[in-house]
Length: 167
Image (cartoon, rainbow, N blue to C red; front, top):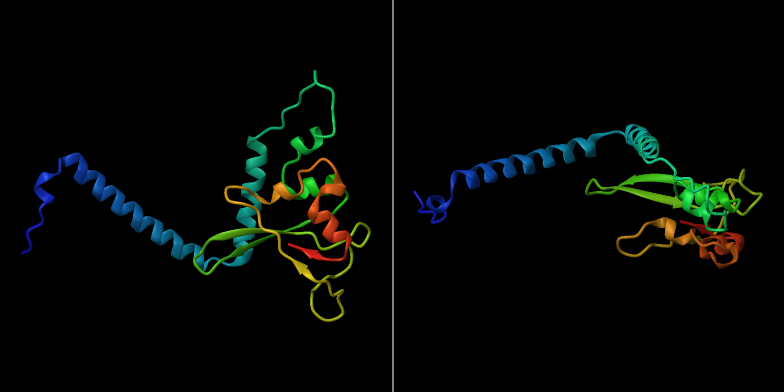
């Protein structure tokens, strides 16, 4: 049998920590396999319920003493779709599962104001638009693209108005 030098040097608490951490790694791998096998409709259902719970447990803060300015509606918006709606745009949310099991949230602005009912880049008999993909920086989210107080300075809105399908 091989002589392992660190076995005799550990205290019982360290053995316990090794066993528990190994069990947690196994549990994480099991959850990852289960997640990979889940159908997309169930993932979307869980995503929507978790979003509702998040909004339920994080109430909006109302400051009655401060006068409302242009940034107040932006600060009170719940998410990307609410921010887009402030400026009159319809935004889609998509949850995509990557090959390694990560659930990735994507947002789409595909319609100019007034053309929300049109099918864009959805196969034959749909409006064809060039696609623009915008990616946020590290430790940020897609809301940074649309949280500007002036619509004219907001790159995604300007691209949509120029006829692009913005993701």
